[in-house]
Length: 186
Image 1: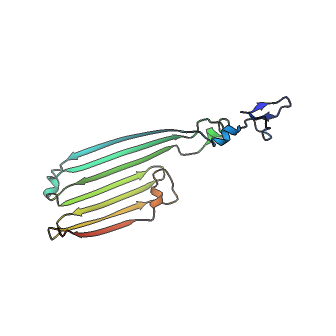
Image 2: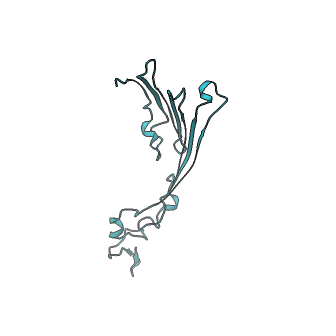
Image 3: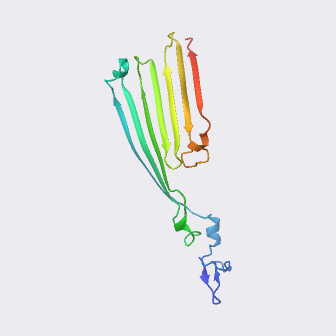
């Protein structure tokens, strides 16, 4: 760090003068290690899994198993920790969004004696207000025993200019739909 000389100027650890008006001057070691040597990251997750039947639904949907799951993923990045370069800089005024939150909810099951397998999922990034909706299904034995149908869609409801750690903005404006018929010969 900088030390004061007799004439009132500051110098770094190697004796080089600091720029005018600067009271802290990083040494060569601090510059080699870039601006920060590390940052503290705290991650947590709260979630649930539910496996049950819903008897009020009609047909086999009320008798077959449903699987529901949801999570709240949370990341806190403390980028304001003092290091050799930012110990006395504007670290307390850093406007970096440190809290990153992602909510997910999904459901699936096996219906009609295992022939129909739907999957739906929803994700929401609270920081960038990005939504993701996924819906797909797999139908085994469509009209014929060896013919399967797989179809689905993924909708990214957000803007590519709203960035955050979930990277959902990267796929914005790239909604996808797919359909596949597959016939097994053997």
